[in-house]
Length: 605
Image (tube, rainbow, N blue to C red; front, side, top):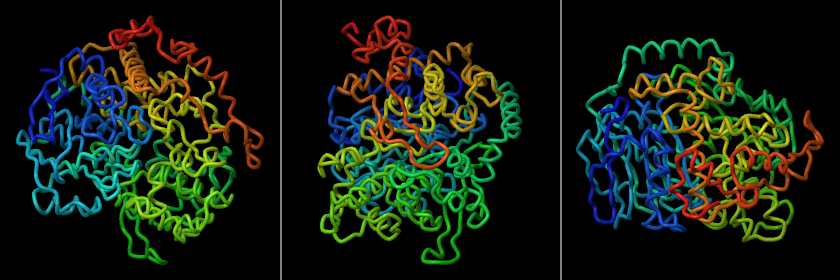
C-alpha cells in the first residue's frame, strides 16, 4: 500500500442511510493527489451538468491529502468541495486545525456525502466504525455549542468535529463549516450544501496517532530542515508574532484602498494593525497540528461592551472586511463580529463585503431604513453590523436578501447596485487591492472559485508568475499542506521556503519517485480540471472579470493614488500562456492532451 494515504474513502448516502468503503486507484492519486484535486475529479465524474447545488444530487466531499496528519510541518489541512450554491462554480474550501489529521488517523482519506437525510443527523466515525445518529437536539445550536455537546455525549479527548451553525441550517449561501472553534472551510458556501443535506456535523475519534509513510527517517530529516528554514524567514516570524493581521500595516502602507467598500485608502492603520492585537488583546498563541508557526491567537476583552469575551481573535481578512470595508476602527468590535460569524457559521470575508455593499446602497438611497427593518446601515455603525450578521445568519428581514450574496442582492435591488457589489463569479473579493497589485486582479478574475486569495496571490503583473503561483497552490491545496508555509510567504521556486520541498516530501511519505517538474504539472492539471468543471456547468470566459470599480475608478488618496487595474492585456496574455482558446476560454485540445485530461471533453476546443 502507498504511504501517506489511509487507503480508503467513506461514501455516505444520507437518503438511504447506506454507507460503504471505497478505494481510489493509484492512477487518480498520482494525477490528482488528494484534497481539492481528487475531490474535484470525483465531482466532475459524478455530478450532472447544471445540478442544483442545494439539491440531494449535489455531493459534498471532505478530502485530506497524502501529507495530512504526517510528521510534515504545517500539514494539517483538508478540503471541502461541492458545486457552490453561491457561485455555481466548483466550490472548494480548505481548513486547518486537527479535524483532517484525526480523519486520517481513523483510517479514512475522505468522505463523499450524497443525498439528503429526512431529519437532522450527524456522522460519527470511530476508527472503522461509522454511524449516522440523530442530530435533532443539535439543530439550531451554534458551532461552539455543537462541538461542546458532541464532546460531552460521544467523545473522548481526541474527538474532532466539523459542523455547521444556524447559517448552514438556514441555507445562507455564504455559510461555512467550522472545526476546532476557529478553523473554517469558510468560502463558497460549503456550509449551505451541508445544511441542505441536513448533516449537522461529522465527529471523528481515532485510537491510533500516526500515519504510515514510505520512508519515515527521510521524512523526519526533511521536516527538520523545513522547520529550520521557516524559523529563519522574517515573514514567518512576523506571522508567528502577530498573526495574519501582522501584515495589515505593511499592506495598507502600499496603498490598499479597502475602506468604505474599496473607495478609500489609509483607514485606521495604526488602530487595526496586528501589533495592537498582540499588545492589547492576545492571551495565547495557538497552532494547527504539527505547525511550528502558530499564527493564530486567542484574545481576551477586559473592558467595554464586549468585556468577558475570551476566544479566537480576528485574522487579517476579517479585520479588512469587517473593519476597513465598513469603516469600523475598533478591534474589540471587530473581534465580537468575528466571534458571531464563527458561532453562526458564516464567512467573515463575504459577510463584511456584503454589509459594506449594503451600506453604500443605503448611503446612495438605493435602499432605505424601511427596507432594512429599521437598521441604520451607516458607515462605522458597529451595532448595525452586529445586528445584520445575526439577520443574515437567520435569514431574518433584510438579512434574507443579503444571505443570497452581494451579486444576487444587487440584482434584486437594481439600479446602480450591481456596480457596488465587489465580487467575482459571485464570491466577494478577499482583502487585496487589484489597483495596487494588478497580479491580484488577474488572479481574482481567473480563479475558478471566484474572488478568493488562497489560490495565486502573487503581486507580480507577469501572467506567467500568476500561472505558476496558481499551479503551486493547486498542489498545496491537494496535499494537505498550509499555503502560508509552502507558497504564500515565498514565490520563487528556488527559495528555501518551501515549495521546492514538496516533491521530496511526497517521495518520502508516499513512496513515489516524483520530480518538481511532475509536481508542477500536477498543479497545472488540477487547475485546468477545475476550469473544466466550471465549463461543464456553464461558467465560462465571460465570468473572468473584475468589478468596474477596480478598472475605472482610481484611488483618490494614498501611495497608489490614481491607479486602476488594466486587466485586459494581462488576461489576453494569460489565456495564451495557459493554452486556452482566446475566444472561448476553453483549454485547447493540445493542452488537455498534454495534461492527460483530453478524455474529459468530447468536443474540440
